[in-house]
Length: 489
Image (cartoon, rainbow, N blue to C red; front, side, top):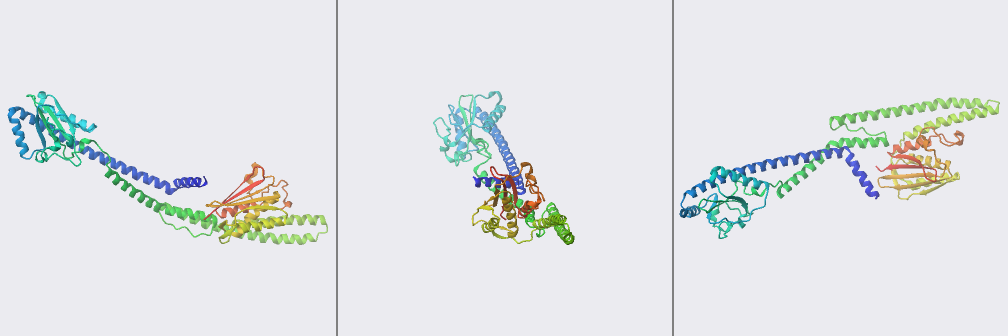
């Protein structure tokens, strides 16, 4: 379940990223425009084929009308002679026969284009012959199942010279079949291919298998190209994002390359300017704290010497107490400054030995720390800073309670450290203040009980310097629970 949850979070992060969104927009636009263009292209091709088919049907209807007029003017005994002469000469665009009865055959399946062609044929034929038109039957059939005579002879069985211009057998193309009863009672039979596309009567096929394969290959090429293009365009933004994450761990980073589009270059330039200003601010702050430390320690030392000259022991003790508190505050401020800016190289840290060392320190003051950490857990970080962070949290835990529990887990994406005590906890309305400098939520509010209220603040700064997060809550049935999440680089 944890793996599925991480995969779901990564999928959501990928979709919400600039790269993911640009890729979705580009791929969707490319695919949509490609499919739209393909449909328009196929529509115009099919429209052209339909127009050619209608024109061919009209020509056949006109030819049949002329043939009907011609055959009706001939004596009945001469009709077969004319047909035989035509066949022996090599046939024509259509096959002709005269039968005593209507020839039955099996038509192809119905479709809108076929019905339109039949109606066009009948309309053109009637326009040519007018009121003399009797019963006329028009349909389409495949040649391998089409009868041409009352005797049952199939179209595909005719001599090749009779039908050499209108027979397609591989695969069989539909043949237009028209039959009309003449005035003498005989049925004139006409059969012909639809040219230039003999398969048009089968109906419109938007995508053949070849077209699907061709379209699929093009779509794959377009998607791969879009992926590389979007990745190339967003690469400077990824570099800037990684630089921002690294800046949170160590302010002393190399400037970001100012490359890419105009907007990205402007952003990188602003980022570099911000980094330089932060470095300047930190340098000024270090100088300020050094000056404060120097300027305050000197008068504090003079006051200590003068206090020793006082004869009143009570006044001398009170004055020394105030001076100790003042010195403690100054030392705490300097500690906070050092905790914010940590100049230390990143090394591989074994957390088990580090926590055991803190456990031994706490045991000296009579407190107990329970550890739940595998010896194999390691983290790349700043060793002294991280030890200081954990020491502050553990000492804080045993200060408000007698025992502390520390658990460490490597989640694969980072290390999670939980420090829990058995103390009274913190009021819910005060949890947000626990990381504020010089804030102590201990009930007595008395600085003489120890501490300056900077331990949690320093711990938070150290965690943030590692790119991690720290949170607190009151554990059910226990005291305060502090959770640290440190990401692996």
